[in-house]
Amino acid sequence: MAKKRKLVESKPLEKTYYKAVERWLTGHFSCFKTAINKGLRLGRIDVIGLRDVGGDLSGDIETIAVEVKRGSTPFANACGQTFGYSVYANRVYLADVRLKAFTQEEIFIASHLGIGLIQIKGRIRTEVLSSPYYDPIAKMQLRLLEALGFGRCQLCDSVFQIGHPEKGKAYSNLSREKVHQAIKLSRGIMFWNREVADRKRRLGIRGEGGDETTYERRFICPDCVSGVISQLSPIE
Image (cartoon, rainbow, N blue to C red; front, side, top):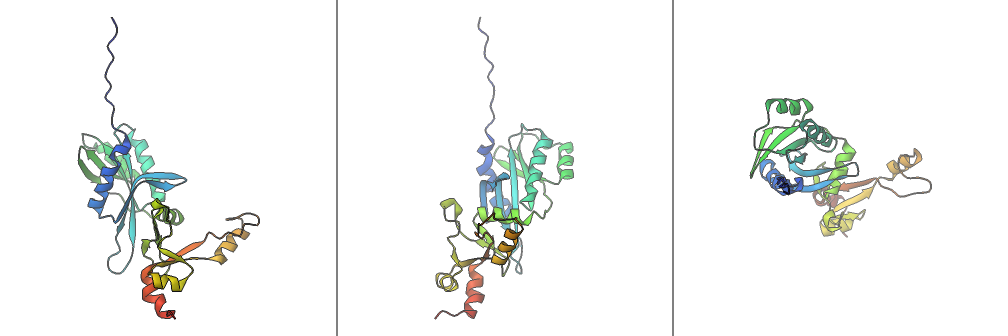
């Protein structure tokens, strides 16, 4: 007689839960921007959210990064991967699919490593352990924001939308070093810091040989253009 094949119950792929976690981020943390599978060359984040935290006197934001697991990855390994997101984000969470609650030992591990925990149980997402606040590597956080279509204003220090990279329009909300055009169109401004670029080129940090391309881009938000710069440079 032929042996009966055992039916193996397969768990849904991790990406199956991304959208649900993204919606949860929007509701739970009041994120004004969320994205899935975003990052840089050195690593991608399953789900990320941006939220305002600055109050009335600041444009400060927080980036929240979530690593999603389906309950089959060794817990310490999943925690380590989640902690790696702290080079990009201010708060980092592991969202794990499980019917039973996190054990006390697992909570101790997550707390020791400094990550937050989210339990995914059916349609319920629960923040079990809050993430501490991290000060990520500045250039990596700013590049991540740019990948999401946001930049930091050099005048007011607020984060604002510079374009829509998902549509192939990374800087569509900006004028390139054209102040009068930015004022007329109610756009922000993108300009280049050539002194810094030359310094890096001389030291071999950026650019090689005769490459004169300048990568040191900076941004000014539409509000600073209309509220400050327009008063200094009236349209003729």
